[in-house]
Image 1 (tube, one colour):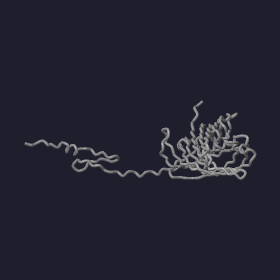
Image 2 (cartoon, rainbow, N blue to C red):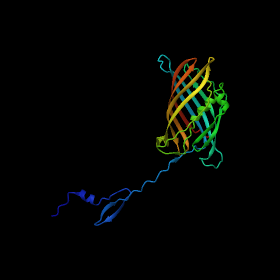
Image 3 (cartoon, helix red, strand yellow):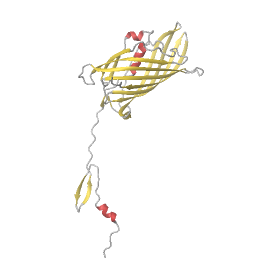
Image 4 (tube, helix red, strand yellow):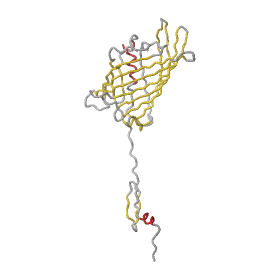
Length: 292
């Protein structure tokens, strides 16, 4: 008598269908099905992302926290100076039908500035509010930004307007037209101000948005002269700042920046030299204002 098979799984395997992603299954020989491998298409070359600041209005919040101490003097109290600046930017194409990369007009204003200083800082606490927003103007061409600061504002030591406008140059940094992983570039910004006392990754995600992460290194070299209590003072120094920018390339928007800085300053007056170290943390957040 024929005995039933005790290996039911063999039959299951014999009639199983092979599933291969991207392959075609064909009949062969005695009904056995075999996968046929199809070569995967070679990946298409990815062009570098083109960046241009998008037209529209955005609000910026900039905060800087700096600690100041006398170098080599452990007995001094470390002071902290916190600066908060709010600004509005408007990018308007020169021609309504122009492409985003065409020259555009930059307008806006420094809306408010608040400075909270330590007990030893000369600025004092409770910075008076601005009598009116400080207008700012410039041009934008693609990712290149040029801010126009009136020469009168940079030399008026009785007003901090020049200093406030100079601070806004960090709020819309110039970026190259293409942001590809591994790219690097450099630029130089020279400014004159009388302060009056005052790409690493393209697959990052920020607030559910795909962004490009740009590493930024800044070198500073400072020099100037002034007076304190009628005594001439000469100031010189240098420093660095390391940070990163998060950019939404497809939307043409800078989202946020963070940075840490360190400055070494030397003050010379009547043969006396004092060295000061200032360490700072900066943060910038850009937002789109709600529709009126």
